[in-house]
Image 1 (tube, rainbow, N blue to C red):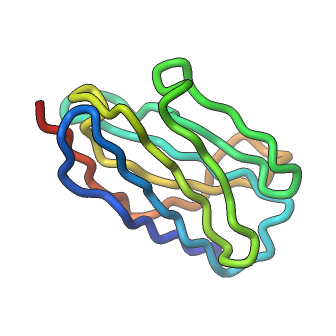
Image 2 (image 1 turned 120 degrees about the horizontal axis):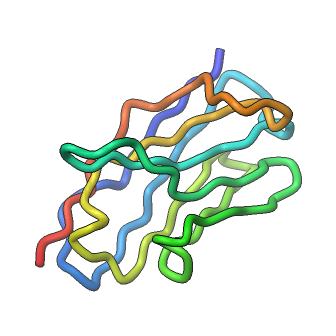
Amino acid sequence: QVQLVESGGGLVQAGGSLRLSCAASGRTFSNYYIGWFRQAPGKGREFVAGINWGAGSTYHADSVKGRFTISRDNAKNTVYLQMNSLNSEDTAVYYCAARLATLIKYDSWGQGTQVTVSS
């Protein structure tokens, strides 16, 4: 069973940076795709970035491109989301999720970590 645990959220001033971590366990993840999502108050869930764990290929949503970077550390079984130049629109609960790279639906989710950007 896949388990995902996020950490690294917090309160940061506009223009600042945070690095979120998603510690993964329960599987060998070389054939998995890990995504970061976020949900702001009163809004729907938004895909932020994703990484094919085995290939290392990444994708970033236009809203964060150039500011956020997803990466993975194979030795630590951890996926990171480096977030720079944060603004108030980035305030949300951030979740990591996992799916087999051959599938579309994410079937494992972490508990989320809150990111609050003060202006």
